[in-house]
Length: 121
Image 1: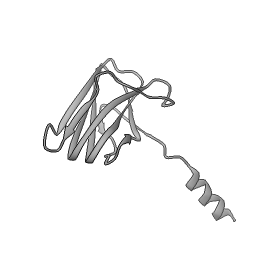
Image 2: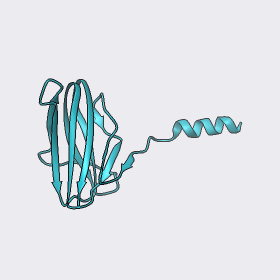
Image 3: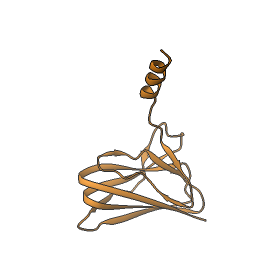
Image 4: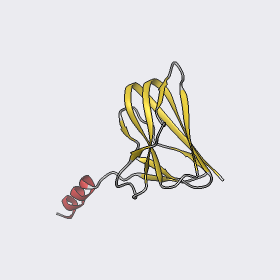
């Protein structure tokens, strides 16, 4: 009986986002549309987020949440249209970052998207 209860709890548990730390790191790779499960909390004087398409084409936006991830909003002018054939990599930077930031793949055609970030001090 205890095994069944444990199995139900494990299967019903939501996938939690991973808080990534500064000064630099990477998010989970994506090969479909949707928000990245990883995020970074803005720290320092700047934040740069770079996406790279290693396959296919994709459009990626950067999103911000100032209410602990309850809701997310697009960062203005953060659209990055990338293709493995070029431009394969684009970046967005934010001065005086606050709150949480993540990427969201809004268009994907056979894509594989990698994201790295760095916080400036």
